[in-house]
Image (cartoon, rainbow, N blue to C red; front, top):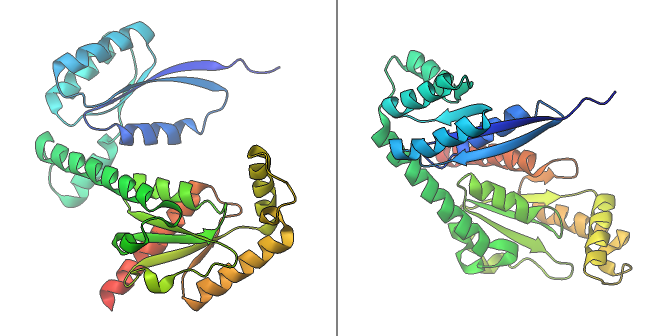
Length: 278
């Protein structure tokens, strides 16, 4: 017998952008199936007036509250509201902060300084996203040297979604598409001291992806764009380029965008350490 789907009202309350609470909630909910989640997102909650709107939603819908509020008096009021309505409330950073406090032997700081740093980080991400969009798919070659990371790969190898994901993590990313018969203009790209990574994908998977793209665009399916031999040649040529430039290579065939981005970040951090040591 099929289990009936449950509905959960999830209130995500934050005094900043809400990204932390959202990501943690998403990771936790991935462990549960057959649940319909209705999210109520409250960001920049920094005054009692803001909290009043949250209170109304909690009172109306019930559910669970995940929150990240640093100012003690405000978070105490939110916890009181939740207790009054018998609603579970979890401060998503409490355990982390408590552990760090014990390890460092010092109490955590109050809100204002920390909030300023969080706001700065938010605007840094916006700047990174703007840069990444301007340097998508081979655009902005003259300023590609300002990137943190350059991603190179054949068409449909997940360059753009990976770049955007990394931008949301605060990295300035450029990506360049390898086109058959068109050499990559390395001499025109200011790449000195630029971390570059190559992406490849299984030829059979690329064939299917490209065929689907052609069908969606009402173009001929037998185009060389989706031809197995053409794609195999593209991948082989890409590998040769990556090897000649000593760029690390990631096979994204069985990786999600998040997994690819995580591997790129690991490689980038290792590269930074080596650069600093040289």
